[in-house]
Length: 266
Image: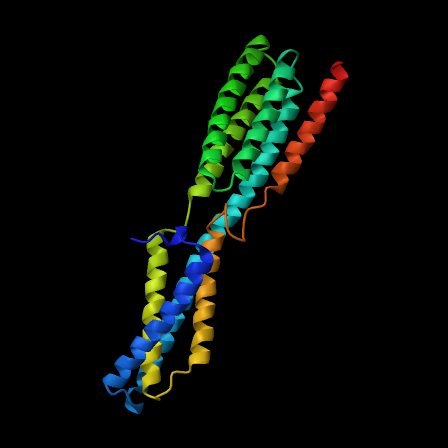
């Protein structure tokens, strides 16, 4: 089966529009061969119903893609806040734990930024994922001695909680990136559009005219709607991507704080 979500969007849109025109022509010729006449104009009501259902299916699929897009965007801000909170709570620890963990949090933030800057480059993604896992293990290993050194410290539960949240959000964002509109739904949408185009052609056969300009305009709009759905569903490629600005600003702020902390120690 063809994976629609993996095809280039301009190619997919052009092929879909052309295939809809072809299905209309097939429907038109079938109608002419079967002797469609004014008596079959009642089929127009069926065509209207089919087009209305096609619109509902497009709206339903668009809603699915839009919800996933909004969830990914919200997770960017949540991870940025968790990163900043973890760094600030680390500052309440005593040395040498504060210095080691501060550097680790900043390095972890840089690894996360590299992961999302990798785009669809599989090698860069694999390297960033490995770096994220290694830094999570290192941060947790560095955090345990700090907790044991001051078991009664009130900052410890909050620091453990926010560190756990930081790690969990990495998994949540990965899952959100992998959550797409099912291909079965996209294929059903395309098939439904083909059937509606064929019905449109069949209905035109009774009048003996194809109305190519109006049909082409309709099919282009349908193709644009489908490609927009796929664009929303591709967070790493396409024209509608998830802005990493909140995370980048948070990381740059932490780098500035870390630089100031190191200058103060000299």
